[in-house]
Length: 239
Image 1 (cartoon, rainbow, N blue to C red):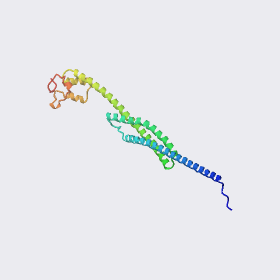
Image 2: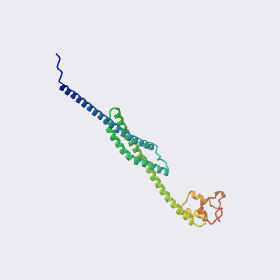
Image 3: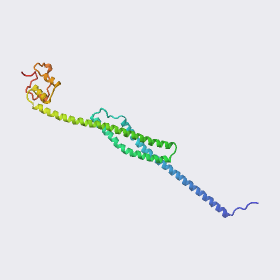
Image 4: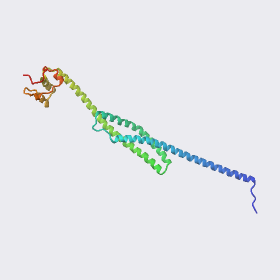
């Protein structure tokens, strides 16, 4: 004996229920897919921003590492010291903003490591750690090199001041030479007394003795020779 089929109203209700379940399932699937797509887009965006900032920091670190690997801070000239000082001071000023960039990179890295697992997570951690190590190394070398250059610069300044004093003293002494009277020999003897010449300078005076031969003639500075009363070439001390 066959069972009676359900009334049409019951079948219609079952159909509506099945359709509602199907719609709910599709909506849930769509929502799940949307969430997955949103997470993938967020991951890609964060990864893109991280790599962009990493590339900028890596490029600066490469330039700085190349500069500090072969500094020119020993036995250099005044002009070279000036140029090297400017270069490394500029790198030191740039190191501050790069540290802020490194902190930002570290924060992005922490966010990304929560979104990735396995190899990608290990790669992110390694990249951020390596950048931090390289920055510390570059900053330490910059501090050392700029310190050496500062010492060189101060030594150059001290030498420049000493040279300025020496030149001023020489200018005064040349004025004294112009004011001396007598021939070249007498001027040299007066300079010996005034300036305290001795040693090798005495040989110059000995060369002016009456027994001097033509091969012992000396070259008298132009400013001294111009004031000499003897306009002819030197031939010895007059009797």
